Length: 331
Image (cartoon, rainbow, N blue to C red):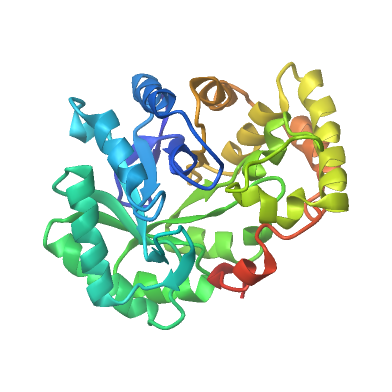
């Protein structure tokens, strides 16, 4: 497994990470034993980053990771955790709380659920519009000094917020959606990260499955699936986006690979400071990511990909409009 450095002075971590959300929440039912087997397979292949959130399944995802890591070498798992999203007993979303006391409260429960002494990287899931980012990062910095956290990250933060946060404590990475279908960060956010020496941790590199090459108009989703409410999966938007996928498929087939592997390889090609998360729920899905790391894209390949999927060609927002408005990265 190739390594990439986490920021300027951070540790070396695996070139890709495993995002665990779908193993417990938001994409319908998942097989617990297969999820654990996928985590074990990832570790065997040299993946070190395991990304979870305390609100994924209201704690179930952290407990799943704890079970998967039982008996494993703690030092071989770089655990990143998001916090701040509040939910009701029915799974409903109640907003965000990233106030200093909430930071420490959420962290205490996370440490207990995971059964660890520290979290490798801790980050607010969203920027809390009611709390200055300096206060949120300051509270996490206190936890770094106390030994409960090693590194601080941000998620879906805009350039100005990143600068303000970084002035309080070094930010190691920004976790944000980035793919052939989501390229908004290239104008301002990505240059800011590179100026400050902050790594990019993209999620959604397959655009929630659209770029898997396996999605179809006929696919049925459970009523608990996030994609039921995503504009990119609705009506004419979906038809248009699947046409883009077919154009990309032609490029992939010419190169002897598949759509998912090509889409992942494209993200990896964006720079040595890019460390993407792969949301694989099954071992077979993990294989696409592992094979993608072996692909080397030439200048001609990249041109063909750009022609197949121009930067602003995708139809529909990446979140429902009400959620989109909450993203500091889109303001």
